[in-house]
Amino acid sequence: MSLKLFNTLSRSVQEFTPLDPTGKAVGMYCCGPTVYDFAHIGNWRTFVFGDLVRRYLEFKGYTVTHVMNITDVEDKIIKRVRETKTSLKDFTAQYETEFTEDLKTLNCRLPHHTPRATDFMSDIIALIEKLIQRGIAYKASDGSVYFSIDKYRGCGCTYGQLVKLNFDEMRVGERVKSDDYAKETAADFALWKARVPEDGDVFWPSPWGEGRPGWHIECSAMSMKILGPSFDLHLGGEDLMFPHHEDEIAQSEGAGLQSNGRRFVKHWMHGAHLLVEGKKMSKSAGNFFTLRDLLDKGFTGREVRYLLLTAHYRETFNFTLDGLQGARTSLARLDECLGKLREIAGQQTAEATNSPLVQQFTETLDDDLNISGAWGVVFEWVRETNRRIAENSLKPADAAAALAAWEKIDAVLGVGAKTETEVPPEIQALADARTAAKKARDFKRADAIRDELKSKGWAIEDTPKGPKLKKI
Ligand SMILES: [Zn+2]
View (cartoon, protein in one colour):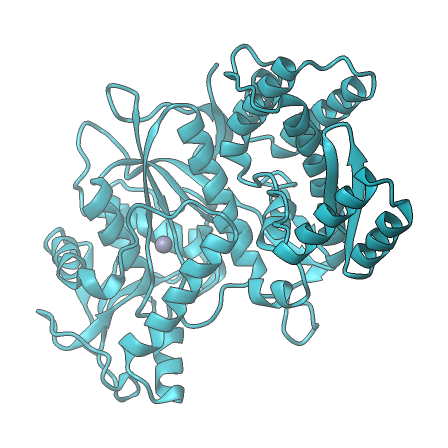
């Protein structure tokens, strides 16, 4: 079965085939965080989407090299370094650490490479030099180096591959120094920004004088350095399509390092926006959440991950606290089913061979990562499994096979199964005392212990395999 993915370059769903002649290795670059604050839930939607892509490729048997850059020098960072009177390194290191922690909380597989822009300064400078040599970049009177859109287009290259641009409205030769700008103001953008007093200590030497790189060139330099001038997949949020990704293409293809008619990136994927409680997320609207905010409200990383993974990546998703409650309920249904399967399976183990669950799950995700369809398959399986458990038609070997199939697909979903809550020793001692009392036919004492357990937050259930403790 072949995997089909939407490619922003062609604006169509295409079969995914890697550049690697053996068809095994996949190079994947995801634009990572700008480490000046905690990542918010909108950012997390993109990163969890990236994790789904990686996990699914690995599930399909590809060997993925996953690169996620850390933007640790950029306009917003410099502003915050100035405001907080810290050093660039101290300031960015704390948010980079927190970001990795959050990735783990959301059970995202850690990227194989997390290059920091400040560690790749010579590669960034070399790429700008290449663009100057080719006549596509030029030094302006303020000492900054700009990318010339006019010269780039003059070489037969297309500026506006991911988005449609109206060149009649653009004034040739105008420049934009800020890293962020709208499509309507598209102009020659900064590759190297000459040092200004506001930059403080944040500057590097270069052939054009002291300064620092623009944001867009950082990603071109680091992705090509690690994955080569042409690679398979580039991911990001749809807000990065313009100008960031468009500029990445222009810089990388403008440098002319690709061979055999290859592109810089074969396949571009973009995750859609996230609304929170039906509105665009903003601090003033009170609907701005970091992952930490949600954990403080008592939700778990697992619940947040599940909710972020319920909608198709190209659909705008409305993230709500009610939705998180719903995630909790759905996961509890799943956990209950898996718990029963474990009980029936006992010590029995099995392989996930010819499992209809795995087969349907794969067919669904092969279709441009139809994750909502995949959850539909999972919950239909839960319903059917519960039905078979209720009618006692599930043998230990069947239960073990079902668990093996679940584990196989959970390698993609990454929501795991909540492991049994650990029982504290004093609670276990009470449960043992109750069993002893029952054996001695002292039912009064057994009931008293049951009440005591209840007051301590534990329910005891007598099952054919003996008493079972459950947290209330
Ligand atoms: Zn980027």
